[in-house]
Image (cartoon, rainbow, N blue to C red; front, side, top):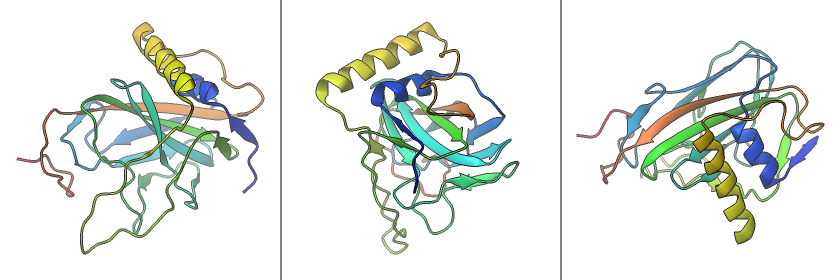
Length: 203
């Protein structure tokens, strides 16, 4: 696959905090914006874009100040047609997001007209879900960077969240081209409720 843009960790932070778009993009989780989940419960994601392109989904843990790439995994197609509702993951692919870590999380969606590569990501290969054991999917792939860079990324993220507003104008100029972004918040409750693969709240 030909990558037209390679983003540094700092450019990724700018992109996560950004609130501008060149076209429409809607992202939502199965329990709606602000939905609540117990640890281990699946968080199902749907997306619709006004233009065709390549979708990237990140799980942003506001409490920890971390960013994890949850879609796509290595070898998983992430090209979406325009004006088409996509429910992720597609059949036969493991759940892409399971509630982990208490507090507020953001599912951040980025849609571009070309593929990108993010330095420091380690993606798990796409595999068929084991229907016999019902094992939960592995954790999403964190952005793997040196400790100093990781600390600086957390500081930049948390400072952006505290200001309550995102960046203005396109981040990483010249690398992204036309892009759109959207974000949907969800909350992971305290406790250790049993995973509920149906998506309904655990009792």
